[in-house]
Length: 178
Image (tube, rainbow, N blue to C red; front, side):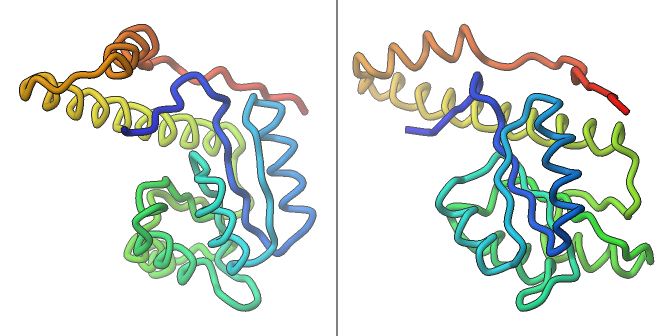
């Protein structure tokens, strides 16, 4: 069955070797209703992503060991993590850096220092798109089973859940505490 976490609080993995940057991102996200998980390096980011399957990853580029580009590439190659939205957050600003991030599989790129409102809006949008995609996958799987006459009682419960909980397009509820 396709996993759908339509009503769960979204989990965001923050990957940055700068402790202050991690803390600022963590506080900002938690103040805006997200759960967070943090790490300071690419190797543990890959492990956390596969273990916890976050709804989105905020990923710095410049880190010791595996850099953000390599982490992004490996996440896209892993069948468990390949659909997790990734936003690269970096002090690098050149078009070339952004091109490399997109080619590695990032969904978006924000240059430091970033605007909190823009970051939160992009996070909301990418998580919403992920949830909608998961809901559509679940619906398609159930439709196929229905056409083949193989629906179970659990499938009927899933259908009811999806009908009640499929996310609608709503503007993000953002907090801008200073």
